[in-house]
Image 1 (cartoon, helix red, strand yellow):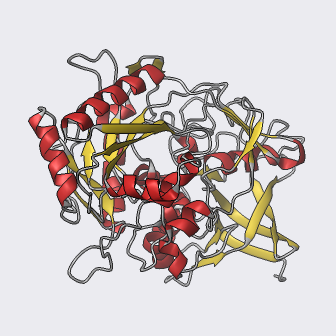
Image 2 (cartoon, rainbow, N blue to C red; image 1 turned 45 degrees about the horizontal axis):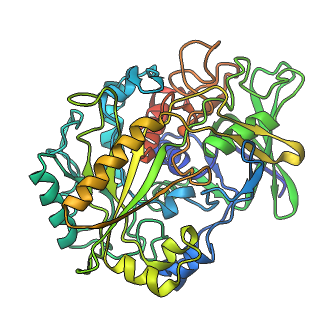
Length: 505
C-alpha cells in the first residue's frame, strides 16, 4: 500500500451513530474495519459551552450549503462533519420507537408504511444500544411505552424544580408526563455535571453519549479498527459487471486516495449517503448505485417540528438541565383524536443567543430576560414519506433538496393543545417557531428498506438489492419517520445489521 491507498475487510463511510455502532459491533469480529470520516475531531475547548460561539457565530457548523429546490434558495443544513457526526451536538434524547411505529398507521394525510421488521426484531439491539449509550430513563408512566426485555441501564435524570412543576400541572390535567431517556454519563463516578449547555452544544467534558465517545472510541481500542479522518469519499467504484463495490475514491489532504475493501457500509446520513450513491452512477448503474427501483433519494422525511416557549415574567426558571420531561398522551389516535398528533419533550434550557437567529430584530437584553423566565418545549409530528420529497445531486455536485411538509393538521392541533397547557401551567405568554428545511437533524428515508427490490433500495438487513457487498446503516433506510428522535433506532438497527447482515462472512 502507498500513502494514497487504504484497505480493510469492512469499510465504513461515516462515523455518526450508524457508522459508530457498526464499528463497535465489529471490533471483536476478527475483521479489519476502516471508518472513513470527512471531518476531524471536534476540539474540546471553552467555546464548546458558549451560546454566542455555537449559535450566533456557528463555530461548529462546517457543512457545505445545500439548495432548497422549492424555495429557490441556498440554506445551511443542520449537519456537522466531525468524528461522531451530528451526535456531537445532539440532545442525547434516546427513545425507542413504539411497537405500532413498525406497522402501517393511518394519519391525517395518508398512511405511514410498515417496516419490513418488527419492534420485536429490534428489541434486543435497543437494549444493547442503551447499555452502550448509558441511557438513563423510566418509561413506566408513558402510556405508549413498548415492552422491554429489561430495565433501563441507569435510573432517570430527575427534574429540576420548574420542570417538576410543569409535570405536576400536566398530571393535574389528567396527562401522563414521564422522564425522558437520556444518554449521559451521570452517576457518582460520572462526568455529567447537569449543565445548561448539553442540547445543541458539544460536551466539553465528554459526558454526553455521542457516537465518538460511546461507539468510535471503544471500537478504536481494538487493533483491528482504524479511523481515517479528513477524508471525503466522492465516488464508489464497482467491478466490470456492476455486481459489487471494489473501491471508494476520496479526497484527503489535497490528494486523491483509493480505499479498497471486501464489504462497504454507508452511514453518512440520509442526504450524504444518497448523494454518494447518486454520484457513483456508471454504465452498469446509470441512475446511481443501488437505484434500479428509482427509489434512491425519494421519501425524504425530517419531521414536523416546533419550538414552543412559555414565559412567566413573574418568576425565573432556574433550571440548568431542563431536558428531562416527555409527553406521549397524544402520540397515537384515540379519544377525541382521529389521527396521531405526536410527541412533546423539553428542550435544553434556552438562552438569549440561542433564540437570536430566529428573532434577529429583538434586542439581546430582551431575549436574555425572556429566556430567563421561559419554559421551553419541542413538538414533533410525523412527516409522511412522499416520492416527490427527495434528494438529488445537481450541477457541480451541489446537494438539492425538495421538501414540501405534509401531515400539518395534526401538528397544528398538537400546538393548540400545548399552548393551552402552558397557559394553564402559569405561563401567560406563549410563543412558537416552526422548524424549516434547514432543521434536518432527524432526516431519514432516502434509501428505504424493504423486501421487494422494485419498491425499495436495501433489503431488511440493510444490504443493497443491486450490490452484494454494500450495506446502508444510517437513517436512510427508515420506511417511516415516526415522531420520535431517531438516534437510538439508528444505533439499534446498525447493531442488528452488524449481527444479521452478513458483514463478517
